[in-house]
Image 1 (spheres, rainbow, N blue to C red):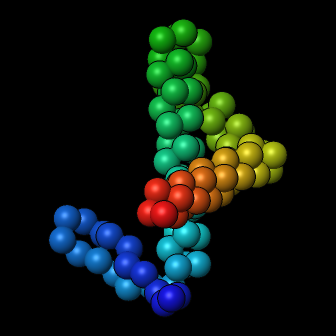
Image 2 (cartoon, helix red, strand yellow; image 1 turned 135 degrees about the vertical axis):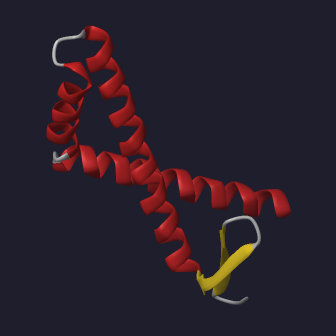
Length: 94
């Protein structure tokens, strides 16, 4: 079995890379997407509550996302999700 795979970038472009790098990149992307969703929720909440506007939500997000336990939880969740997806895909092939 080859230790190389392809990572899809865009509609018709694929980049060859080692499987470990692909999984690591997927974890980083999932963590960034999670942080972005949290930012969106906090900014909308700040806008709707009206205490500090949406910029107040940004300040809350910056203090929230800077905590090491939050970053650890985001990364752990991404790792478990990616591992489960690969495990499930391998089980379906059998």
